[in-house]
Length: 149
Image (tube, rainbow, N blue to C red; front, side, top):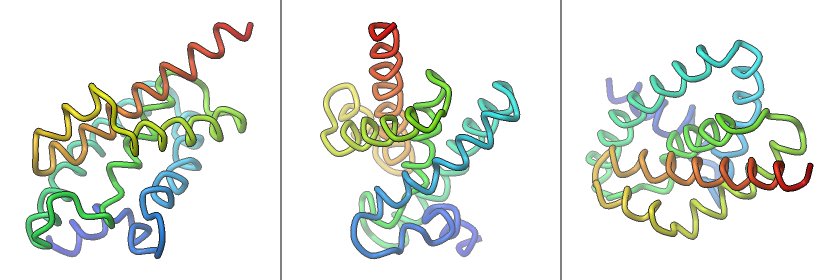
């Protein structure tokens, strides 16, 4: 079970890459977002929700074992955050780029309400703040597209 938690929490060891593991984890999620989008909105939503729940378990266990509140190498939260961005816009090449940049901006800056979710603690806090950052990034990207038309 611990190996499974580590695999999932680090998103198949992507989080163990040196320098900026959150960015690596976010970038690793982009092809997944594109592929899931092709399978339809119901599958996309179900996969994202399931990954959120599994990620909550895995990141919570990993954090507990490593004795760190939010270990840098845990990047399943970034994967869910990126997937959340594309609930709002189609993952075209341009949207993938700007979605990544906006998500990382909100994930690193953690403005309210993102910071509020981080206070949940454990796996819930690890996962929920990134999902909130994904919602903000998706809404901003969607708003830009509405204004651009």
